[in-house]
Image (cartoon, chains in turn green, yellow):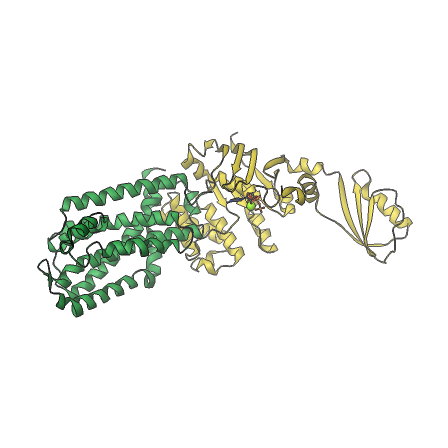
Length: 257
Length: 309
Ligand SMILES: Nc1ncnc2c1ncn2[C@@H]1O[C@H](COP(=O)(O)OP(=O)(O)OP(=O)(O)O)[C@@H](O)[C@H]1O
Ligand SMILES: [Mg+2]
């Protein structure tokens, strides 16, 4: 295939993925918006005022970036894991396997689809957040780049999950038992400065901490972590996941007998 | 002339230890209409899976129009279209989306793909259904959709794994016609089927696989020439209690109004009728017990008991 043909193949996968999640928007776009709206109401309007301020910001304003990024993470991950597993389950993945499309393009196509859903959900949640908080943006470039890289990272993670999944349950195990706890402990709702030293150190092992803090910096200009470290960690994870996924695809793991 | 497909010493052992292919070698010439026959579990789909990069091979080589599937895989895959045995459609998409996307995976842009989609969906009688959800198509329509999908990148070699399974006779006939036409236009066809009259009527060359080995690989004509005997079923006008001693053939009274006779080519049918007349047995109708290829096939492949080994 020449570059033009590769581009057509890539765009075909992306379009297919976007068509899929917009067709079932009630399952893909609506739930995260409802969930985060509830967070805004409960923590922002009801409980938030009693907590007071966090690092000099109203509690609501402090948690908004984390909540937005959480919805980006969940959506990007879920899109790729369920779509890829679904095409494995229906065996329609064979359409791509028999084609000349290179594995790297298959991976990037699916991952772009996941990013698209993650970022779209993030955008809608951000719009909702405007009604509940005084949203200001400290650094647009940081905000956009961290959200895109995070979406990319978790879309890659979802792809890995899709490759390993053998039944539908396998698609929800990682989000329920790993992703959600790590997100909650990654400083969405608090600054890790509040934690005892030991738990602060433990928190540094949580990669999501770096993303949430980087993203929060984009909005508020504050972070528990130096910004450069955040970028470095995210990029390292992306590189590692890309390599692992591509290796497994080339071996035909989970898709070739 | 380059072979459309060249398979050398192909072996496959699945993870569960099943040896599905035990070293098969085959060559299919460009332009051929080739039948790949074999019982359930013989290894046909495994071979097709390897050719189309869906199954890892354990050993051997595959070339599609001289492109090694391990080395020049983008080129090898571009030459090949596959209609699999199992439905593998993305059932929530529409037929139009499915075929246009498939073309996209081969680098064909949407404008061109849409033109091709209209052509193939129309030819396969699915154009009216193009915006329906694929899940709601009938089984035969799904099979035809898989044929249309396989043609979108206009492959030079088309492999069809039991395309007519579960398809009604009318549609089956129109599929035969359609596939023959594609073949006449130059596409090499490999077909697997359990309807042997289909293979006999359509295919110029035949290979029979049994228990992971090629047991026969020749032209359909030569294969049929090997057929030395034929079994006829005779329905009688009046019932008979027992059979007289006939001179020619092997006779069997299936029930009082039905006789089976197994005769060799030299013995001929005329002699049989002479004997029937002499014994005043009146025949109402006569038919072949099985078609010729079917009989050969049964003679060449192993019995069920042995296959469980
Ligand atoms: N994915 C798999 N894992 C393990 N064994 C398999 C797998 N697929 C096929 N087999 C085994 O390999 C052998 C050959 O199967 P294959 O599907 O190639 O036969 P076939 O000739 O296509 O049969 P049919 O006419 O029933 O379609 C069988 O014994 C089958 O059980
Ligand atoms: Mg089969």
